Length: 371
Ligand code: MRU
Image (cartoon, rainbow, N blue to C red; front, side, top):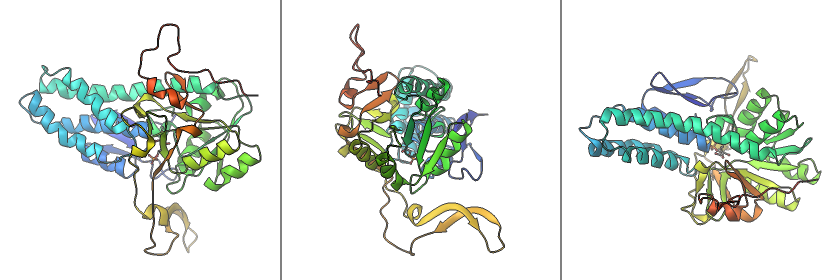
């Protein structure tokens, strides 16, 4: 299974996803600023993966801090945390990781600065390991939704590349496959950055899962023809009322799924759930560079018939562009949210952090068996 990020030899190593599938190139970051640049430039992307990268980036930056004691250490850590927080606004995972690291430090204020630095590295590595375990739990619950012979539609990439490993939306597919179910996947290409075409197809093909690439505007026609049984996508931020921010185009898929009575599920680790925000209207939506829309990255044939990967302009020079990277799907379109604690109705997600009362599932529901 592909691995998007690792801590190796006191450095953060990330697979450069902006070059996939043309080139498998790893970038070694010895400076936290390079980690922040990698998050901004989508060398690493996907909500859980950028949370892990931010945690590792902070651990990396902390190594350079010279401080006499706890308070000074925390003060010098602040600009490093801010550098991570300012990279991408929609996924809550970066804030989640920063809060978690700070909480760990605050619980050990009596420790030496050297020990605090080591604790940050250990915690960042723990975040990575836990993410894989979380995704496996999502896979176990989510696989129950998939029947033998089902065709699943997914949008963007919420696979191993977007996480510490295993993926969120892809985990149920991997588990279903391991249970011997014969499944097929349609992957939306996901304009403008083509995470579906470049990344989801790449990793599912490596897993031996039959995957068919479709253009974003094909999903409705396939649903109408009865060729899609279920939709599973990831999330960058799921809020108190069950509204979900995810890659631009997710909302369109959700509305289409409702029209065709197709179950629409979100795979959401707790690290992507933000109960501090009441509705999706308060989620900051990242807007990215117009060049992502006016240019397409692909294989270019030069005059002397040599193929190379590069960027091709497809729109008039200087044309006005609106490039929203994410959209919000209102909770009423969502059948269920698959978490590591079970599957929740969107309206029950606000209870997810509460300890379940004895003998109850704490709000998690058992999905009805589909025929
Ligand atoms: O812009 P990206 O590629 O970071 O967007 C990624 C997505 O929208 C994913 O679906 C989401 O982060 C969930 S990843 C498990």
